[in-house]
Amino acid sequence: MGASVTISDLPIRKRLHNQKPYTAPQLTAPVRLNVNESPFPPSQKLIDDISSSVRSALDSLHRYPDREAFALRSELAHYVTAQSGVDVGLENILAANGSLESLQQIMQVFGGPDRSALSFAPSYAMYKIIATTAETEWLDGGRRTDLTLDIDHAVAVISAVRPDIIFLTNPHNPSGQTLATADLERILEAAPAVVVVDEAYSEFSLSPSAINLIDRFPAKLIITRTMSKALAFAGGRLGYVVAAPAVIAAMRLVRLPYHLSTVTQAAALAALRHADDTLSQVSELIRERTRVAVILRDMGFEVIDSDANFFLFGRFADTARSWQHYLDHGVLIRDLGIPHYLRVTVGQVAENNRFLEVSEKLSALATGGTDRGCFHDRTRASSVPIAHTQ
Ligand SMILES: *Cc1c(COP(=O)(O)O)cnc(C)c1O
Image 1 (cartoon, rainbow, N blue to C red):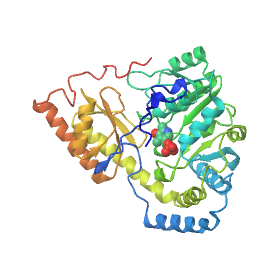
Image 2: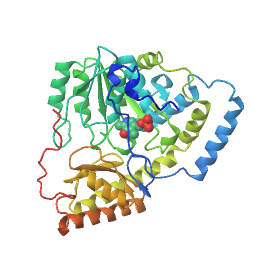
Image 3: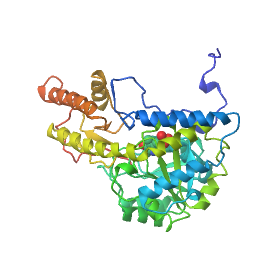
Image 4: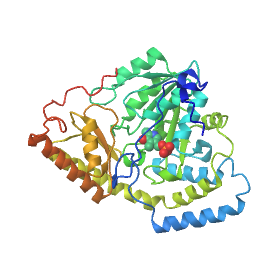
């Protein structure tokens, strides 16, 4: 029905012409290590708690949910206080359906026509999509060839283009690298307006959270976080902002009333009650991250050190073919279009072992002569540029 028109027949906004939607392939491979989810399904205890919490909440399903999500924001504030050591209150928190909704709300408040957003690519693909759909000019400051951020360069770019929003991810996606606090402070000092620090992977890193800096930069610093990764709640859709109360007040101007359903609030509260158990899996993932990286390096791969639950590895002469090789052997990883590198999420031990087996096959192929150079590219020095975005 209605198939006679295509998107180009529609009177859509000019900025949306030829845009591509976010597409990480959702394929049903036996081993899925592509979108940085937790590999641990919820425990029976957690499933039972979520079920009974949601069941009790259903009594009032004919009513709108708590519009301000008081109980949930208060529990998130406790969680963040325990995580960061900083005294965070519910007036510092705004919850949303995933941190992507938070990012979109930030863009609605601080971006828009005549405004610009700056990031340092390669970075998380959604920043650009959210900026573009909000009619915000997109600027890319680039990274060094080893994917680290050149702070002197970043500060110079910020002073030159004076962006309305700066996006940083810490630890960074896709490299997994952490930005030092001193470097973040330099960016905050140089920034003319808002700096968003996306801490989606904060629980995997030993470095301090930027929450420590809110008191020094209350009008500039906005932190986004999520229950999708370390808290293993990706399907529940719960993210949040941590910022000064004035920033939260500004974001309430754009958030839709009742956006967090009664079911979402009840389920997220139950998941937070089990946060300690869930976080104990994080230590296991960190151990696995180290183990897998060491074995990959022994096989001759290059691995970029990561503080998150994933890492980039290479070098591949042909990332698309190598990605397909993994998939053909039942392992779904991620090709982000970064030359020579693929990204893999750390999974459970058996999944990681399968990933390593397939990696070993690839390594043998590259040295075995049949397909030399097509996969594992040993002929290139590690100083070869992998990104030319500056
Ligand atoms: C996974 C991820 C998110 C999470 O988004 P949710 O909407 O909270 O699931 C946000 N930012 C980055 C950089 C991510 O990698």
